[in-house]
Amino acid sequence: MKGMTLEAMAKACHGQLIGANSIQYLNAQGIVTDSRKVKDGYVFAALRGERTDGHNFIAQVFESGALAVISEQRLDISRPYILVESSKQAIKDLAAFYLSGLNLKVTGISGSVGKTSTKEMIASVLSQKFKVHRTEGNFNNEIGLPLTIFKIRDEHQAAVLEMGISEPGEMHRLASISRPDIAVITNIGLAHLKTLHSREGILKAKTEMFDHLKDHAAVILNGDDDMLSTIAQVQGKEPVFYGIGTEKPRTAVYNSKTLYASDIESLGLKGIRLVIHTPEGDFHTRIPIPGRHNIYNALAAAAVGRQLGLTNEEIKAGIEHARTIDGRTNLIESRGMTIIDDCYNANPVSMKASIDVLSTADGRTVAVLGDMGDLGENERSLHYDVGVHLASKKIDVLFCAGTLIQETARAAVQQNPDCEVHVFASRDEMLKELLPFLREGDSVLIKASHFMEFHEVVEEIITM
Image: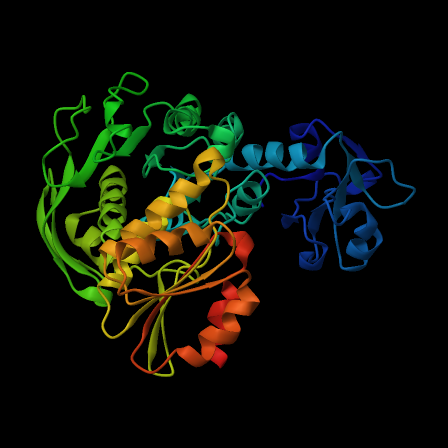
């Protein structure tokens, strides 16, 4: 970690360096908050959590080779440490300091739905030309973002950083760390309504990113989103809009989409063929991941690629080599069944999109759904709407586990009596009936909010 001496770190996080003696000029090799990940030369930041206190592991991390620790309390030790008021704030300050000293282009991604899949698509495209570092998994919050940044090394030429928020002001804190050269917002949907209250509140919170962009930054927005399309300028520049076709929402204020898709052909679970139109010319390509929403991911990736000088041939190759990750429309072939593992998280928009994917599958279609969280006062009606959508797609079987998801089941029965519906109070009760019910040839969607822990449903099906 170039430039991260103990002395420089203490100054960057407004801390007091104690006990460093002659090693204050040594560079840290890494910064972690998990004591199990400490290696020789690493700095361990002791965080206080709901279940554990990192300060209890300070002796252990020094035995593992830690160079120093960051602590909120004075320590009776002879080893070096940086005393701070808040370890959480310290790692944010250190991440901003470290990133500012690196010579690479930063793409910041936010949005209600599709952040992670868009991040993976952008990284795939940029990797055709650059050495790319991207957010791993879902490390996109005020702890995850700094930990992601600490893993950037000198050889990296581009970083793709995902930023997820759940309350007003949080994007200010994240974007002030990442300072993007390129800002991408995928959509304004129906997530975190309990704290952001409305789509207008979500738009305001997401666009806090614009206050922390680097000079001459590019802003890339989904032009088919009725709220994002109302943004006329950011820092005196018009955003780059992308979308499907050339038509625009009634609320749109821009002249046209810089990039758009046409000639779209669904290949079922094998992906999508399409033509992408750019100012540099048009090209045919195939997205190897199913779901119409992935068209938007590919367009966003193409827009970022253009900003960083990639050719259409390089963009096409990146799209065609894109892959998803566990829990994100990940297709698993097991025991003659196709499992659509989309269990990481859920909100009404992403739930409907996943049902759309399932509806394109072969064989008997089985949706295994759980509660969606953090939807505010309209949570029951939003679950009901998902059931209406599922019925319209003629899904054959619905298994539900949870409380709110019973509204989805009620709507499915009312709107499509041919849909076979099974409702359970808990995930474990559902599994007892689900596992013997499934058969060879089924296509099975697994989706719920993260707290439902439906990854265990995926594991049980694979190992049954």
